[in-house]
Image 1 (cartoon, rainbow, N blue to C red):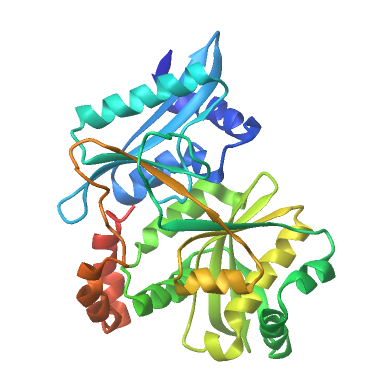
Image 2 (image 1 turned 90 degrees about the vertical axis):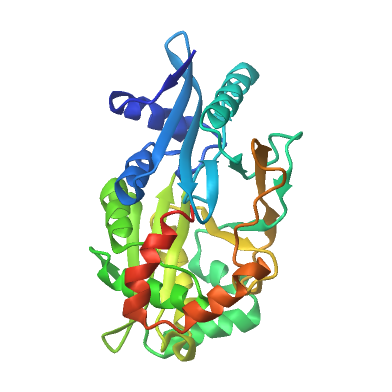
Amino acid sequence: MIKLLEPSQAQRWDAYVMAAADSTFFHLSAWQRVIAAAFGHDTYYYYAEQDGEITGILPLTHINSLLFGNTLVSNAFCVYGGIVASNDEAFRALQAQGKQLARTLNVDCLEMRNRVQTHRDWPHKALYVTFRKTLDSDHEKNLNAIPRKQRAMVRAGIKAGLVGVIDNDVERLFQAYSESVRNLGTPVFPRHYFKVLKEAFGNDCEILSIEHEGRLVASVMNFYFKDEVLPYYGGGTEAARDLKANDFMYWEVMRRAVDRGCRVFDYGRSKIDTGSYRFKKHWGFEPEPLYYEIDLVKAKQIPDINPLNPKYRLFIAAWKKLPLPVSQVVGPWLAKDLG
């Protein structure tokens, strides 16, 4: 039987997520509250139940945008998602439910963001990879595992006197992050979104800010899930590059995560052959393909909504020149539909 998640069942849903081997942080039920509160999109969190036990889950978000199309996504604003199921019966039932909803909503397409290929008869975007690596409990071994040139960057940051500080609010994160994405020509998410994330995930959502002589130079929001750490939203100020603050920041995340008991560092998604892709490879991480599988409903081909699309080139160039305060006001209006 397929059911829609009610608030009273969230604890059962999350217990299933924590027990399932192939689940991710982005399958947790709190994302439903986050997406509704921060962006106002409709969500459909389905679960399969048999003999009173949950046997599978499928979180879905509906984004209907005049600018960016009409899509049903598992899971929007997340790098992973898709169906998690204990058996083939639950998987097939959830897949059928997702396809049925996509046609009821008359979307362009249904997108499943999987780490492994799951829907082999669906086309997928050969655009993204992820970077994950097992951590050692010994800090020195983790440092020495970073290739020499990048390790020198980390040591330069240490020598410069950079310090990591845990922030209890999102203000400094928002400043560093919004400056970075503006410089990349990308609209920033609203400040409220980061507040909602912090409230929803509590101690499993931690903000690490990097200071130089008491001044903010970089900041990152990290998610903790099972034995993994996922630095997710991060950025640096203009001074970050010369101080090697980004390298130091990710090392500091790694170091603190090991102390917290983490054994996997998830460096996250990157588009192939972009700056962030090369940065992560320089850290010694190997790319793993992501299978963003698409069930075409109204669309005839996979929608190409990404910054590498040439038609967005002029927009990106213009956005980079916006004053930061302007980008912080206008950006959220666009970013809410870029799930």
